[in-house]
Image (tube, rainbow, N blue to C red):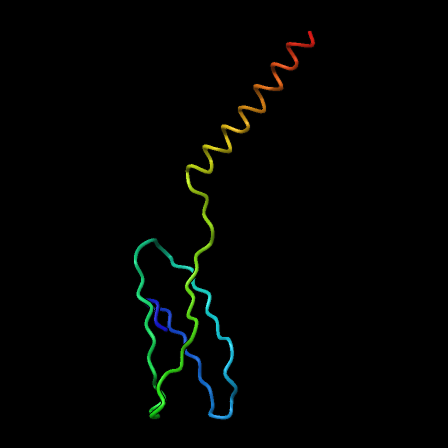
Amino acid sequence: MNFGTALASFTLLSADPLGLRSLAFTPGSSGSYLLSFANAGGDNLGAILDNVVVSTPAIPEPETYALMLAGLGAVGYAARRRKQARS
C-alpha cells in the first residue's frame, strides 16, 4: 500500500495461513488520498483481498457542539429558575 511517501507491504509465504493484516496511517495534512493494491508475487493467483475497510476517527460535527451547548444552557436556565422560585 502506498500513501504518498509511506509504503507498507505484507509478504506471505505459500505455507502461511490467511489472516488479518492492518495498517494505521495518520495523514500529515487534509486532502484526498489514493489507496491501491498490487500483487508483486509473480504467481498466477494474484492478490487475495477481502473485507478491505478504511475508517476515520469520529469527529464531532458543529451541530453536536450546538446541541450540547443548548442542553447546558437549558440546564442552567432551569437551575436558575428553581433557585429564584425558592427565594
